[in-house]
Amino acid sequence: MRTLVIAEHSAGQLTAGTWSAVTAAMALGAKTDLLVMGGAHASAVAQQAALAQGLDRVLLAQGAMFENALAENVQPLITSLVADGYTHVVADASSMGRNVLPRVAASLDVGMLSDVIHIVSADTFQRPIYAGNAIATVQSLDPIKLLTVRASAFAQALSHEHRCEVVAVEGGQNASNVRFVSEQLTVSERPDLSSARVVVSGGRGMQSKENFALIERVADKLGGAVGASRAAVDSGFAANDLQVGQTGKIVAPELYIAAGISGAIQHLAGMSGSKVIVAINQDAEAPIAQVADYMWVADLFEALPALEKAL
Amino acid sequence: MKVLVAVKRAIDPNVKVRVKTDGSDVELNGVKMALNPFCEIAVEEAIRLKEKGLASEVVVVTVGTSAAQEQLRTALALGADRALLVETNALLEPLNVAKYLSKVIDQEQPQLILFGKQAIDQENNQVGQMVAQLIGSGQATYASAVNQVDGQWVVEREVDGGSQVVALAMPAVVTCDLRLNQPRYASLPNIMKAKKKPLEIIAADTLGASVKEHARLLSVMPPAVRKTGVNVGSVAELVDQLKNVAGVI
Image 1 (cartoon, rainbow over the protein chains, first blue to last red):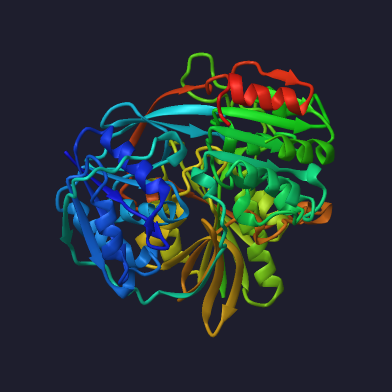
Image 2 (tube, rainbow over the protein chains, first blue to last red):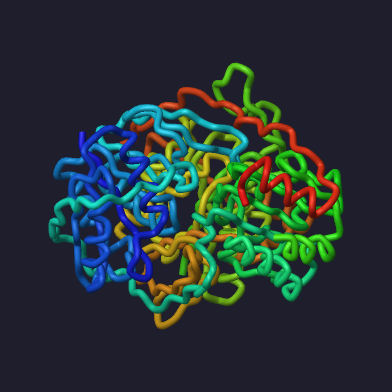
């Protein structure tokens, strides 16, 4: 058995989800390599990755074709590495992992398991289905197991002083059927939503984009990230990439504060794994109360400034 | 130019999901089924492309049991021109579905293949990408805008932390995200008209796809229940609880 973890990085740093994917890979109990793909800055990322505890090797694939991690470009590289002797492939269930891994699966003629939250054994895994309303235990029958893992379900791997070997690998292609045009990434001083220790989210109850500043101020006091319900995003109060829920980000922070969020199933699917949930809502009967550890029935526009002040 | 939309019959999103007491699966007997919401967005996008004159024909396809004809009729009522059912009673594993669909694509030769980004039942988020690999085309997952520029599909896609634009040669695979469009409702006259539109049934095993079992479902359990929470009446009480009881701030 041998496991390959697909690393992801942004702004010269491995993503938090990659460190969680390494932890998930460790639970498989096999020797584990990490594949770092990218342009010129990827070698610095590989050196950083080589400090992760438990890794056997870091594989570094460098080239302009890997710059934007287009699935069409990276799939041939991953497929050839895996066909060369891996039994397991693990990636964070990020937009990149979900985009790339099914192509690799199809190229190897094997299935794939998405959003794994628990590794039962080397071939059996648990994953949520039906918006987290059921947990399926699934056994893979394929010789190679491909998994994306839900980062919030696995602690981040630690780093240590010892640096494992970094090996250069080659492969990939400049696919002719796709061309990268542009990318617009939100720049924020706040921690990443998917891995933040504290998340403060607002819903339709916030009533306007301007009022979202109340959420931001509480988040900043706690050093947390800002999130939003789908209703708030659809109403234009918050940006798309702040959406927490089945179709947005899945989060499981130490503390999740839901302000003016009623608690639709699709939102609960994205945050019910949080350690402590606080709901601030005018409606004591809102479904969010069913998952909240602390329910505070209050007017948001008084409660949020009061909370900011008290912290 | 032909657009093919692959759709799935799934549990109605408004139905409360219950796990069977024997832990074998989710209860689907007598439960209301619907067109998967993301597939509805894909159908809507195809119809809009036709309305804009960018597509000449919208073909909708699904893989599933005979009952899935109901969802194909829904898509026809929304504006698709004709429908194909690849009929099978087997469990719908993503790679097997992708193989059937790529055989249909070989026959139909569409220039754009639209999918929902995922189905709300199994939430695999795999079939579109697998089809793209099998037919050797480019892909744009999580689309929030689809345009045609100089014979290419230019797609804006939602990615973690922002958005990305890619240009795809034809034929291309695009999987649709929530904010691509707001699907219309089918009007009564269109529902009536849909009954007369062509719906072809193809037996899955006649397509020559090499399908097999890749995974076995061992059990399905309800999620762990959170312990009952407490009500707090003031900011002081909340902060005290978070600091001294929960220990999270």
